[in-house]
Amino acid sequence: MNLIANWSYPTAIRFGAGRISEIVDACNAAGIKKPLLVTDKGLADMVITQSTLDLLAAGGLGRAMFADVDPNPTELNVEAGLQVYRDGGHDGVVAFGGGSGLDLGKCLAFMAGQTRPLWDFEDIDDWWTRADADAIAPIVAVPTTAGTGSEVGRASVITNSVTHQKKIIFHPKFLPSIVICDPELTVGMPSFITAGTGMDAFAHCLEAFCSPHYHPMSQGMALEGMRLVKENLPKAFADGTDIEARAHMMAAAAMGATAFQKGLGAIHAMSHPLGAVHNTHHGTTNAVVMLEVLKFNRPAVEGKLVQAANYLGIDGGFDGFFDFAASLINDLGIPKNLTELGVKNPDIEALTQEALKDPSTGGNPIEMTYDNTKALFEACI
Ligand SMILES: [Fe+2]
Image (cartoon, rainbow, N blue to C red; front, top):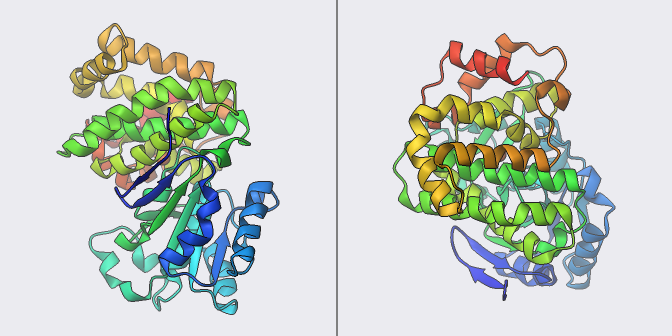
């Protein structure tokens, strides 16, 4: 099967194994002459990162990297990165990595020419119009995991280091101008990260599919995204070098993140404060709370998930879909509950309050209230 293509929706995507070799051409096309490659600490010394820097250097674009990025990037990472970006006289960003590297890279390109503080651009009402759009630097995004889909997203999640709240910073121009989706970059991912990130992609598709908002394009994409995860995540988990499975998972990740402009829901509303306070892995946390959220949403989503089950080739309607999700989570070795995930002495009251403030809350098919959200957290402990 030929898994190489150029897509222009939702942005220019160069998809296929080996296409990281086009990084210099992508920077040229985006108008970047002196890129700063932004990634996380864990990736900084890895071969995929160093060889990408080698390609940039050989193409005359320098070899600059900023990797002081925490797993849940904070405004302190943004400030440190901006210093490096400005001191180095850079004119664009190569955002490289999983969610943290991509989100911080995008945020640096956005903030590079702004004069107002970061929190002025939180995703509230039309706050994004406060930004000087012409001052946003170009972004080339290169995902190295298959889950977040941040490479096709118009926002970054940045954690406030003082309040431990995850904030969404939004602007339409956060959308990278060029994305290189090269599944070979994901081959070295440890299996638990393959599992967690893959379940993030699945959660994006599932929540977008179940969200009540009208967006038929996203609905179709979410459905096919779920099918790609069902067929390929177990293969990529069992054999990390299965490049075809890795490619399909990379496509599913980009599809999930494109689809969730239709809305997310309780899985993400709960996962965001859990990650911000307890530093849990985002995708893995989604998987841990997923089954309780499915049970909670059942009255509103039963019909839709019967359709999904039919398309995915699952017998038994809603129950069949639920059992499929449960065995996928089990087979991937995901912790059974939040306690097993490492959440110690959670402040359920505070988590509930934060979940209700999360923008994902509005996309849940059943209205989230203090009582039912608290009960959801309790059920996941
Ligand atoms: Fe997510």
